[in-house]
Image 1 (cartoon, rainbow, N blue to C red):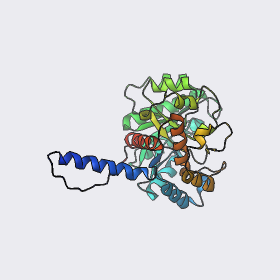
Image 2 (image 1 turned 135 degrees about the horizontal axis):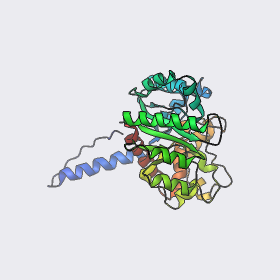
Image 3 (image 1 turned 60 degrees about the vertical axis):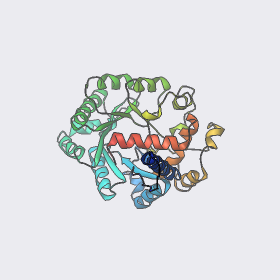
Image 4 (image 1 turned 120 degrees about the vertical axis):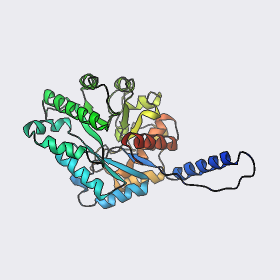
Length: 319
């Protein structure tokens, strides 16, 4: 995130220090006029964006979204995500992943793994995944999922690229597999929807957790909201994503606390309600998600925006 420079005249011995303080203050003040946020996951390869992707990206930029990670979930979509990163440089970055649901495709066509490795090696590809285990559905057998998960972890370790983890009803198996690797790069639990207890197991291992508009759906006393309410999830372990076109943040949900609803600015609501729906969420909804998270955490939106953007820049090696 580039910093602006400020010139001033100092007449005393501490002039240099004073100039630095003024410059930093103005830099952050400028950022906070419009939340500067990074979307750690938006599925812009989805066919729902095939007709107006230019407009979707422009709206995101107008809303304050500086960069967007577009995940690949198969060899084909990883290639498409890479293509988008080259069409929209400096805002779109791709990841290369074989989603647990698609694991069997590598077994059925082993030669496709070579193509996948080439995609993963590309400079624009900033992470490996989403990969992991999903036992909620049986699109791929558990043993097949485990095999392809381990192959991707080995690839990420060799490349030194962060790993995006998708996990549903399979936490212990995911943890057991991750523990096999001694020199893992940073691990990000993507689109987390588990319990506070499950989150602690990830946080204890210094993993990062990425949150979405699922906050609006979580009505339990043991889930994502509790993580934020009681301070369990520290800002230095948090990322934010829209998971577009999914996970629409329904700010009108009846169970959403009043202080959270009133913590969302009119500007963010304008983008959300004008351009996003349950059928097609967009990256421009990210500021509203950040403001909701901030309200739950009892922090300012600026704090959450700055921390999550910094985490993303660091983890994905962006500038």
